[in-house]
Length: 249
Ligand code: ADP
Ligand code: MG
Ligand code: MG
Image 1 (tube, helix red, strand yellow):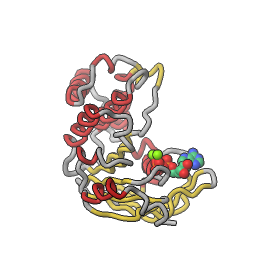
Image 2: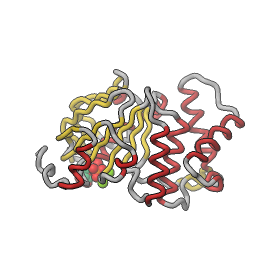
Image 3: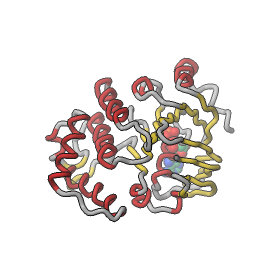
């Protein structure tokens, strides 16, 4: 489903990704683990199309189409979704207004009509119930004053509503207590199905007790330096990242 070939990326004179290769199959949950500063967030931003990153070489193919040639909104319409490590607070933008605008932007890009208000409310309520999101939160401005856990649940709510093909979760576990971790993980697990794949980025192993990955990749210095099954996450928990820090140098 997603194939990254020889991705080389720099930002402000620093080369961060150094010929990264990664394949994620249909229905697969792939985890990327790695020390701080190894380029995990950079990879997720480049997949989503954030500006400021200069792609010097390589391809990111979603179902065979190079998304690097697409604008961020076109990528979203094609089924890419990024849940941020640090969701932004957007004062003045109502959460419901934002969610409806996201859904309608995607539908317009696919030449479908806008969602009706009753259908939208039903859809949001069902997803919010599943993620144990307090409906009062939905009446507030997007993420403004939300706790860390509430912000992450809001990211997963957006993911559930947009029904993406390929989901990137960047350190969704950071800032979550154990209850929020369970709720967010259950939300993700409920969305696991054929036709949808996940790239779960994390520094710690504990998220992967809840979202059990099919494959685990270790990232170091802007490259994937090791790939294995879910047991690789447990090994890393034991050994730490010390073995990997210099491997890609
Ligand atoms: P990770 O998510 O694995 O912790 P990041 O992708 O956030 O790593 O960062 C990788 C490297 O890129 C770090 O050395 C970081 O300092 C650098 N970096 C990230 N963003 C910028 C930026 N805007 N300008 C310069 N360097 C950056
Ligand atoms: Mg980091
Ligand atoms: Mg990061």
